[in-house]
Every structure is written in structure tokens, then in C-alpha cells.
Amino acid sequence: MFQVITPTTDDEFKRYYDLRWRVLREPFQRPRGSEQDEYDQVGFHRMVINDSGAAIAVGRLHFNSPDEGQIRFMASAPEHRGGGHGVAIVHELETLARREGATHIIINSRDNTLGFYLKCGYDIIEEADTLKNPMAEHQLRKTLTDHNRIIYRPDWCQELQQTWHNDIPISETMGIRISQYTGREFETQATLSRNINVHGTMFAGSIYSLATLTCWGLLHLQLRERKLQGAVVLADGSIHYHKPISREPRAVAQLASMVGDLSALTQGRNARVNLKSQVFDGHKPVAEFSGQFVVLAEKPD
Image (cartoon, rainbow, N blue to C red):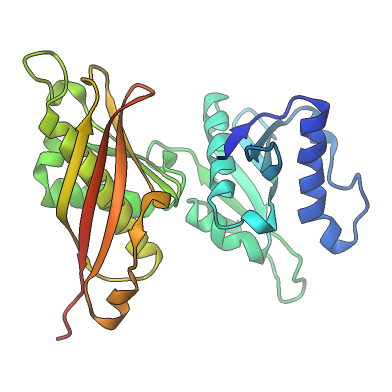
């Protein structure tokens, strides 16, 4: 289990700075202490930890002006890369920057991390000459808008939302919208007032539809991540309801719940996967959905 925390104790900061140094300074034979700067006293720090409290990923936000935030010292432990922890840190720091009134964020990135920030919706505004200097840094910027509140692949999520509204009109009628995607987790919301029954709670059928579409959306995005083609269809599904929903509903599907192999698509064969999602009333999970999905392989012309 991983969680994002704000380091506050001496021990937490020791682990925080140690990961900074181990990832960002030690490989370049830089001394201890070089992983800190004068902005640490006024910056905002976030750290992903595991159950034992070990630092898994770190990052810092400071402000260059009331409008401009800057993310620096992003680092993930090599043995935990690919787990979405860097995205979790960026999400926390961007959320904080919005809350503090920033209109945009800048990041400096070397070539080896450039792809990650581009996937998080940042644009290159000043390209470095890495042919002359491989260690040179590109400068990236993200203007904070409602659209790019989605932290990972915001353009893909915008396209997916439009596809839902065009091809599945009931999704727009229900007020279903994508609220967040991190690469490992996909979250949607619906408008309660559009799905309310005579008891003042959400229709069971609407809960089922929201849960199903959330799994469908995560699988669709994963196909794009893996550069695979295919049409996602629901083969079978079941849901367990624990209590009525009386607040704005949201649903979450996690990549960790996916069971199955998509590689059959590369051979022109259909792929089968199982996915789960949870529907929440506020912060409390009140329904669990399990779906069996088939990805129909594209037929050759």
C-alpha cells in the first residue's frame, strides 16, 4: 500500500532528502547537501511512502511569483518505477498549486524524463541543445485549466469523453464525466440529480452503468498506452450493492485489478480481460463491480 504524505518529522525529511540525493546527485558524484537549495525552506514537499514508511518518490513545489509555480527535485526509487508514483506526486503538487492560485507551472527536464512530463500535459517552451550538452534541460510549461486537471494523458481523456457523449448518448444524459486518470487509476463522476429515483437515491441501473463505463474507459486507455487496436465490449458483469447513494457518485477502476492478456491482439486474435471498479458515496465504497471484457481484434482488409 502506498500513500502520499507531507514530510514533517526529522526522520521523514531524512528519508525524503536521501532519496533525492540517491537518484539525482549520487549518479553524478555530487556530494551530500547538493540535493538541497534555498527554496526548500519555503517550498511544499510531498513524498510517496510504502507500508514500512520507506520513501518511494519525492517532489517539491515552490513559487517564483504568485502566478507561477515550479516543480523541482522529482525523483522515484529505481526499484519502484513504473508504478505511477511520479504521477501521484505531480498530481499532489499541481492540486496544491491550483489551490494557492497559480495560473501555470514550469518544470525543467533532461531528455530521460521529458516523455513523462509530456504525458502529464506539459509543453516544451524552450528546447535545450542536448547534442552539445547531453545534461542540458528543456523548460516545460502547463497552463492550469479545467481541461488539464486530468494529470495523465489529458488529451486522450478529452477525446474519450467526447467519444462517450457521441456514441453513448446516455453517458451525457447521466452527467458522466472523467475526473482523473493517472495511468494506473481511472476515476469518473456522475450527476446525482440526473440519476435519482423515487427514494431520493441513485438508480441501481445508473450505478451499474457508471461502474461498467469506468472499467471500459480504463481498458480503452490502456490499449492506447500499449499501442494496441481493438473494440472493447462487455461480455458479462456483476455488481454488489451495499447501501444507497445519496451524494454525488464517483467510480474508480485500478490497473492492478486487471486480469488477462492483451497480447493476443498483436496476433489478430480477440483478447479477454477481467476488471473491477468501485462506486463511492462520498469517500465510502458502496458498490463493487466485476466485469469480463472482450477486446475484438481488428480484422485485416
